[in-house]
Image (tube, rainbow, N blue to C red):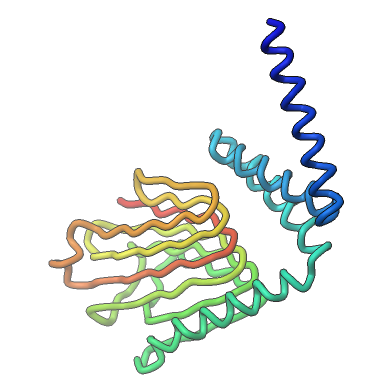
Length: 216
């Protein structure tokens, strides 16, 4: 019991010392924000997704308020990366490009036409049900990128789908596979991709994101 108490006391002292040291180096407000983000990531790994995302959001908001120049730099880098990737689609006649501060796409209630598309937003919400998609070409590419994204995609079994997802902070779930935390990278391909009549290639890239792909 005494050893456990001494260990806990030592950890508290070390933690307090590091907090004071880092607070003097980069500011107490920044250190507190980083701790809140870290707690949010811990909650995500513990399965408390809602609490985790709330804490991460609060921590990032605190960081944004104290480091506006860094936030602006992240936005510029994200948009620049999007422009580089979207250039790959511009030769296609059915290519659509959208970039907004806020973006909300909900194509999950009625039939919709699937085209080559690149979308970038600072904050984006997308619900895509590919089982309702009217597909006009043998192969289609979707490029979805931004700073903060909440992405829900439904994949039917009659379409060949390839997904590549890169999320710096957050969660990616494709079928039964799931990754969460910092820098999650996942690549998934449906079993019928090589033989499917219609193929859809989806690239997802967000600084903070929650990606959920349901495979039917």
